[in-house]
Image (cartoon, rainbow, N blue to C red; front, side, top):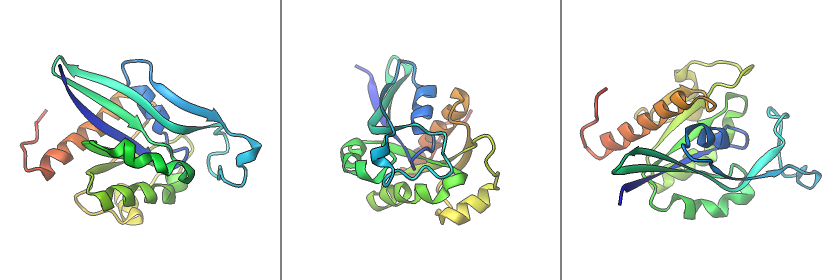
Length: 186
């Protein structure tokens, strides 16, 4: 039986969580996407992501097999406040988390960052580089998010499998450093 590692993919509404899980998963990902309706107009703030027509209502799930002895399970969290009651269950047993940040709506990732900081769950921040969004230097984003200097911050494209892998590697290396374990090189 292979060892299973659980990683959360979090962030604000429309940050790219479902897209990242889909890009990384070697199996058809489980998605709980539902169409945004008029009933959510007062609840769903789509400013900056006006093209978005669906939302995750429970979670996304994907799997990556590293080798015969190791599998990574990806759990994409819902990005809206009304679904936060699911987070404690999803976070149980997680190795760590990726917080996706969208510079068009940077403040939306604060609740995710706060959640992981308060629970001592290691995390990295992946700045999802959307087409047409303003580009900011990593230090400007770090300052805006008030991240501790040891929290890794990386640029990524949630649509690109290789880019997503680099974010996951950054997380695993971060967790290893926090635990005082050797960080694999190469």
